[in-house]
Image (cartoon, rainbow, N blue to C red):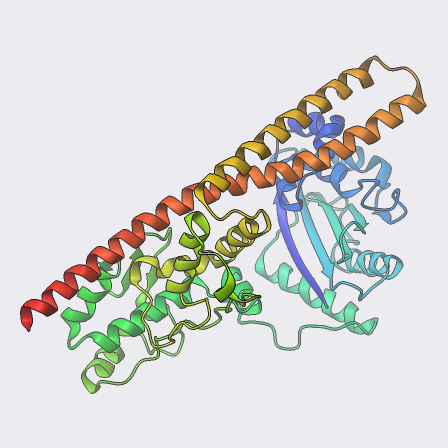
Length: 446
């Protein structure tokens, strides 16, 4: 199975020449960073020696890959089209273990010839630095044949996907038999694939809860507002936006079957249809190993996190019928981060506030010390003229760089834990205060 995507490359000529001539710019960058860096930088990244086995798997179509930048620029100058989109950067990615390097590159060349080979200059590079082999295509935006521009519209993208699938079938590779609805947002598709909770699904659950609790239209809107939603009433649509969210959702577009149109919601409210909002879907339970009975009492940060995870319903012995408080419910979307943080504290044996701050200080000190060592080695490399000694120093620098990367991640985790723990404490205090108020009201009624 191969997946495809394509985007445009925009930059001024001076900028991309700078990028192309600066070797430091071609190291340690993610794929999606490069569509900002210009044509020269994209070509430099795409044909990177380490990623392509010393460029054994790099080919030029209608150009030489070694002079691709110059060839593409000459075409633009010939037709006086140096402005606008400079090129297009496409990717074809295969499942891990499904293809070897030769087959991946062969498929890439055939795909490029089918899509662009009759009119455009293309560089095809097969990257082997990840478990999933993937082809990069850099396509000149201006045709060498007639000077017309390439248009990255919906029709051409679907053609790219179709040709890719046809080639996968030709070489007996798997294809997506039932692709997702084209209108499904990528983030939702990804959550569905990874069996996680999406933001749209969380909004649907809140709406379901409001329907179950409400007795009329006014009460339905009031309950949503109590959950933290701001409602906007248009001529045709009602939109919902949670205070902790960056985007709004139209009520009737939460599903495509029309079940969340206002008329159908009111029918459900008045008919008192039961709703299924007790437990969110796609929430993975956390399994704790060992016997908690014989362990010391957990205090400080870890205790705070364990209590919070219990309230979110992801620890054992949590009643599925217990309603998750609206104040913390949206943290289900950040469950991966919270789990990473509590696992990190377990590995570092952080149980108390004192443990946390001691470990944080040690990590920061270690990072600073190693960075000083690396700076000294950098200075030695500059002054060294012996190749063998220089290589040895570079190896030491690489080792220290890996250590620094690991320590920087830990430092960021410590910062994240400090911020989140403060938010957790505040939310739990608010929950406790509201529960105390409710208990007082119950006592008064009695």
